[in-house]
Image 1 (tube, helix red, strand yellow):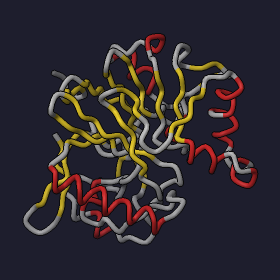
Image 2 (cartoon, one colour; image 1 turned 45 degrees about the horizontal axis):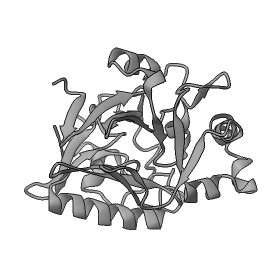
Image 3 (cartoon, one colour; image 1 turned 90 degrees about the vertical axis):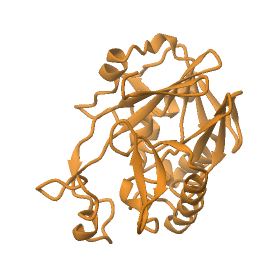
Image 4 (spheres, one colour; image 1 turned 45 degrees about the vertical axis):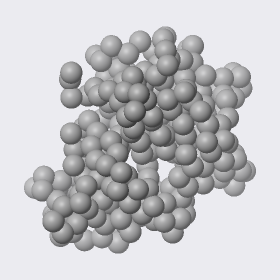
Length: 266
């Protein structure tokens, strides 16, 4: 099986990417030091930059094809090509499920006003929707105006609560802080389990530096609390994790090393 694919019981994950540009890690994490980032082998390049993957996920579960988040759609975005190369037919997508509504998670909802997944329902956390459509928030959120509200006008949105059952094998769990309505997804199939992290963590460095909160967190204190709780549980249970911003393909586990918790990619 290619490294971008993995099975959890009867559920299939296909890792997708909308690109992985390089930038200084101090941009999203300004209260950190580059020396701390260099503690992690291979993470920082010679220009003191890290690659930030805009990862999404295709999931086959209970006869449905589901896309988790839709990337950024930057000028050099690669998601549509990556899907095609990995055998994902956009016309066959049944559901597009959002962990939250930040720009790099809703970017390919539409192109030139037309849905990129024409036969899909778009499933949004109710609490995140309630936050982003506040007048003072949406006025500064062009991505909501361009990539989310048109879906409502087309009647394509369904809203979900904290513990929404996407299929019999996929259930959302509320993991707030990064955004007010952020959700992760618990996968349970044929005695196996996995966890779709969303943006509970943005970097493998947060496996150890779990207190670090990026500037994108709406509520940094709550995000920190959520991250500690989730990562502690995932480590204790040895759960397989899919993490969209971690290095390709984003599959791995949080494990205890000799002196610290680390991300162990697979």
